[in-house]
Amino acid sequence: MTLEDVAAVHALEQRLFPVDAWPLQMFVDELSQPETRSYVVAEGASGIVGYAGLMCIEPIADVQTIAVVPESEGRGIGSTLLATLIGEARQRRAADVLLEVRADNPRAQQLYLRFGFEQIHVRPRYYRDGVDALIMRLQLSGAPAEQTSAGQPNKEAGQP
Ligand SMILES: CC(C)(COP(=O)(O)OP(=O)(O)OC[C@H]1O[C@@H](n2cnc3c(N)ncnc32)[C@H](O)[C@@H]1OP(=O)(O)O)[C@@H](O)C(=O)NCCC(=O)NCCS
Image 1 (spheres, rainbow, N blue to C red):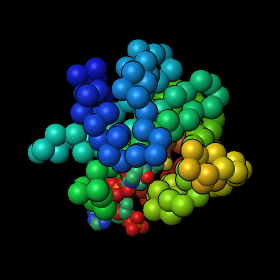
Image 2 (image 1 turned 120 degrees about the vertical axis):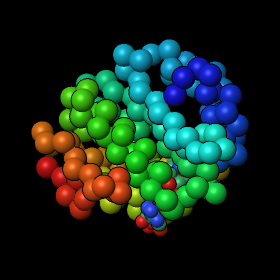
Image 3 (image 1 turned 135 degrees about the horizontal axis):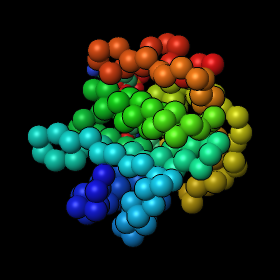
């Protein structure tokens, strides 16, 4: 993701996260800290169809955001974005990757579980509309996660 992408990303953000969309300036601020942040976009024929971002301050990496437009869901884009962030966390020598996910978002939770994330905490009423946040963690081993040719993680990906 570059500064030129931010307007399009922010438009998607408002559509995909109506309750707690980040302000545009938040993306600008994140991109201005490449020493600890890494943001990527997925591009389709119509433009940006997904985006994701990681913060890594050793030894912890945090998935800051991940999103795919509804029209492009279910094609492996979310998995590819997440695999990219995990690869970045490994390169940056993170020991753990953490993320927060809404308790009422089973689809995203499934994605994280497939990559080997496990739930470690619940933050009650974390979100503005009163929904709990689940805190999930992936413990990174020394070996890089293997990918199939389809870009999907194998079942062992991310397991110690
Ligand atoms: C969660 C989210 C990022 C997943 O993105 P995605 O691109 O749909 O993810 P994937 O396609 O990699 O995987 C999702 C599903 O598609 C399936 N899939 C993956 N590749 C596929 C392919 N080539 N063909 C068909 N299905 C496929 C997966 O098995 C998975 O199935 P399931 O969710 O029904 O169990 C997306 O749904 C999203 O942005 N949601 C709204 C925002 C959000 O909730 N973000 C997370 C906040 S914590």
